[in-house]
Image (cartoon, rainbow, N blue to C red; front, side, top):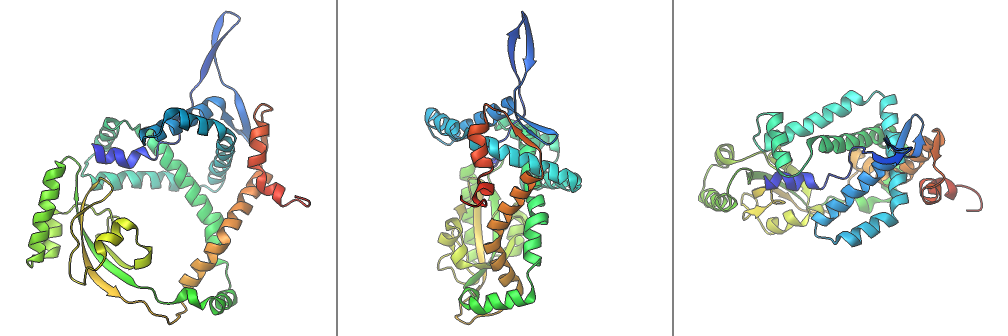
Length: 350
């Protein structure tokens, strides 16, 4: 199933640990080199090689030359190892915070969402489709697990604290100094009809979309046509509707078909990331205004957006400072300058 493969291929960055073998004293033994120890965890050479191979293979599948990608990955080996150390610290922090069950629930929900989108009735059916596309279900789940770990830890330890830690006075002072940021933007509200390619002939799906559009423009019942023909939407993330999207922030794939479409009218059918065909109905448009409006959440978001990069840096610096990290002599010269770059910036004289 090509469309499922398209979703999954970009996420195959992380892989399972492998081992290398060599002969010693006439016996072949399976060994692995520890590149870095992170508290009770380790980063092994086999894991690093697997990570590098997956990155190279992924880039090659996107049309890049293997030798060029391999050269780039080799040059960034120190950065890769530093990232793996930070990742290990996040995994350990998540365990300390008791997030394991929440993370697993997040992974299971992603699987359920994809099964619903592609009308797959069982996990086994999903795994079979993934494997047809050359995707390992276990590697994919591990990739999702790592992403969920990062998102949950940072949200609870950094983003949430920054967002809710701002006082009323700070919000008011920021608003008074940046009123131009809080003018009312032009917005658009839309509903979606999505026809997926999964398990279907793409030409037939596109032809059906044209026929449905003709019915809609002739006065057909939108809700009935969507219910009888539509799949779980991709533009609206499964909800079928999206309200008050900022027009200037629309991605090109949406901005282009929606341009000039009036309230109550429909876009021409367009492809959505090779997943299927989309028809959008414009439910509402609101014009922009030069008048500033204080909205607490908008001001919090703006302030947090400015503060978060520095706060994330501080968070990772503290994780490293509180951890036992030992990098092997072989890799220390290429890893330490990257891993501890932020700490060095804070030292006098740097």
